[in-house]
Length: 199
Image 1 (tube, rainbow, N blue to C red):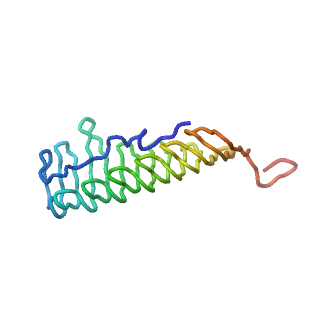
Image 2: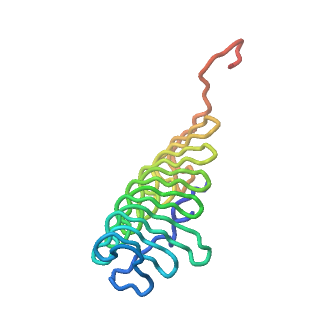
Image 3: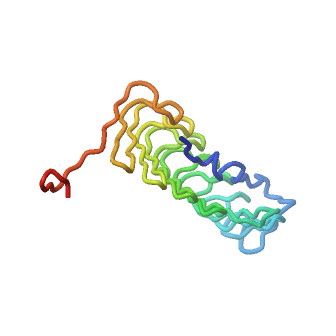
């Protein structure tokens, strides 16, 4: 069984660290006050940051549009900034349509968040260093639903998997596989019967 994560799907090498110096050799302030106020900073790659600045660094609410120099694909972050990096509540929209919403610490998702993947899968729960870690819910596009513990992007520890055919597995997991004590509940039917046939 494979689940997609921020790291395996689209997240690696996306976020940025805007230079701490107030002198930018590869960027220019094209609008407003990029020292202590609100302005727009443009990099030679075409990427831009629009929002608050304190002592030449992005601070407060802002939007960063990352432009890939080769493909020209856009990754857009909107949210809280501190010390020139995403810190606090933010949202990132990736080139393939995937979306992350949640808490950031120094560019990296940490704490509670939601990740909507381009393939239709969804994750809602806790993150640690950009990985699924702690309590969470992972819903597959095919209808499967896992609720339980995660560790380093894997189902790990106690968890429940609900299958589209009505079966339910309750038990232990290790690296996305059922491992340890557990039980499988077969499909149950509750409804109307007639002449020994369910309707």
